Structure formats: C-alpha cells, structure tokens
Length: 97
Image (spheres, helix red, strand yellow):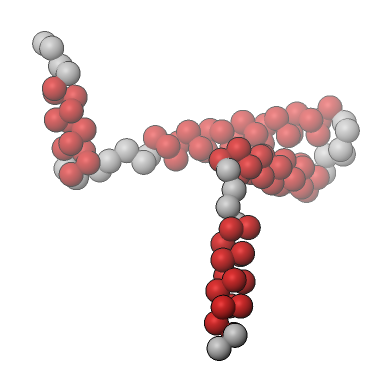
C-alpha cells in the first residue's frame, strides 16, 4: 500500500521539475544552438577565436533564421481547408472596397 503514494510522489516531482518558463526555454535553445554552431564550424575546419570562425558562427545563425522564417511561412493554411476559409471570411469582413 505504501508503494502507490511513493510512486505518485515521484511522478509529481518529475512533472513539477519539468516546468520551464518561456524565457528558460528560449535561453536553453540559444545555448544549444550556440554549441551546435560551434561544432559545425569546427567540423568545417575553422579554429575557434579566429575571424573566420566568428564569421562561420554568424553565417550559421543567419541560415537558421532563414530556415525558421521559411518554416513559418509554409505553415499557412492549405487552400480550401477550414482554416483557410475562415481566414478569407475574416479578411472580407474588414475589406471596405
């Protein structure tokens, strides 16, 4: 009988420890991306601390931003879908022509 409360307590503590604020998540992602970019640039043969390495880091960051922008743009509703029709109806409500 004592096993169930202890399991519930363990599960509850794990769930609460997994809570992160949006700023915590953003910071974790920034750190993870910085490590990935550094590893990528080292893999290309650039030496850390050199101007070419810093340029590579900037290029990797820009590439990731472009990829994110393309992913956001492609997440528009499919023509004919309910979301697409709703978007068109909303636009027509504010069209004063």
